[in-house]
View 1 (tube, rainbow, N blue to C red):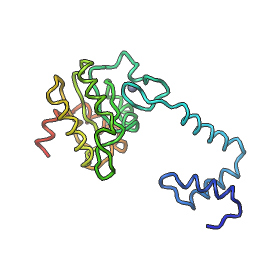
View 2: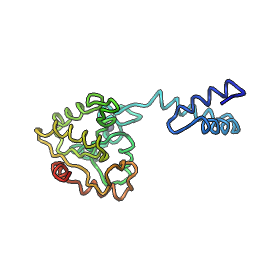
View 3: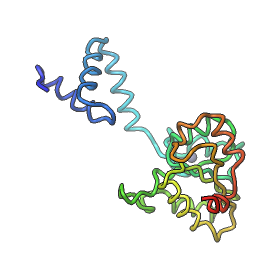
View 4: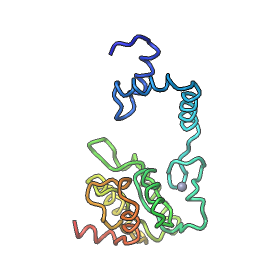
Length: 206
Ligand SMILES: [Zn+2]
């Protein structure tokens, strides 16, 4: 792609680095911004910069938050003895949308995936196990998507928790294999949490 301006080229290059955006789309977006009032670009860059500089990860559940301890962990009316284990903040948002879950969360930050070079030590599994040991947790609910990586991760954590005094369960699968949690509709996802099953049962069925 031949550019008439180095400034334009640089802007397109940066935007094109985002996933799912090729150079053509990047060019379209950049030209769109050029046609808008200058403030619009400023609002966009300000919002991104502010997010990048000020975002925090909850020291307890590791979700993205504006505070050291997120609003869910800080909410005393929630059940702090039940932990729902999810992959990332999108799953927290999806489950919160169902309004069917009143416990707290634990965000792993990914799934075990040898192909992608992600091992257990890169996830927040130790922090989860310590929480179960020290905070009198009564139930851990696995809510990872039922892909091979999700199952591997569930089983790895299950083995760590098996000898501790804690109930383990998994969300019931109205959600078909391979569906990502964030795409499940609210009603289905809500039901799958309410009608969760003991984790051991999910092992027998598979
Ligand atoms: Zn939190």
